[in-house]
Image (cartoon, rainbow, N blue to C red; front, side, top):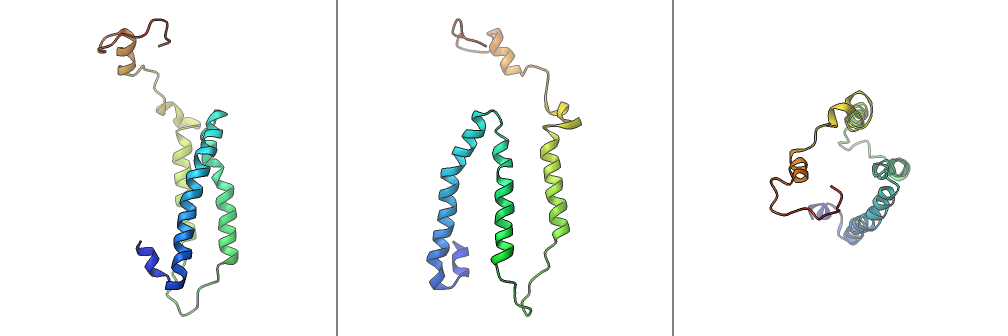
Length: 133
């Protein structure tokens, strides 16, 4: 908990509470949102649902956090680099799902383990009769 020692003693209980609240909310809300999107068949939507939340929270941080003092060693935010990094990560993530790269990520061959299971070889047990393969 090195982060805790960076704050003055009176603020430390609030810092621990805030961190614990973040973990608790994520543990409660995450599976519900993920399950809802998985139920409708679009589990990637759970990740897209975080975009508006991040935008709202970034706006609140920008609005309510006070600016740093002029005498401090505040480094300039590399906004262009962050935007380019975000676009690059988005492009890599989307490339496997849509567009011209999608055929590289989907194999038309049957995986060896599945073909061995279907043929009955390589397994020490027999498939249940009538079960779909």
